[in-house]
Image (tube, rainbow, N blue to C red; front, side):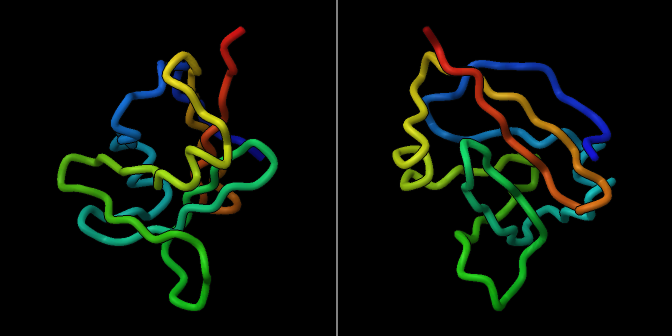
Length: 103
């Protein structure tokens, strides 16, 4: 069940996304802590770190920024013309990144 949505924005050239403070608090993401980043069926999932998982790991910066791994950007075929939207899935304690492909 998706609880909250953050408006569509253009995907940044750096691959760095800002996670809104509200989302960080609700999902239990802590700054300067690692999260798991997984890609599945045209969606990126960001979850609190599970040391046993083989998913990509990244730190959330002091300012709430998170770098999406280049390999995920390439596999997902994300371009600078694409837009992304953040969804907070509170029951599953994860952030969902969905893309709107450019035409």
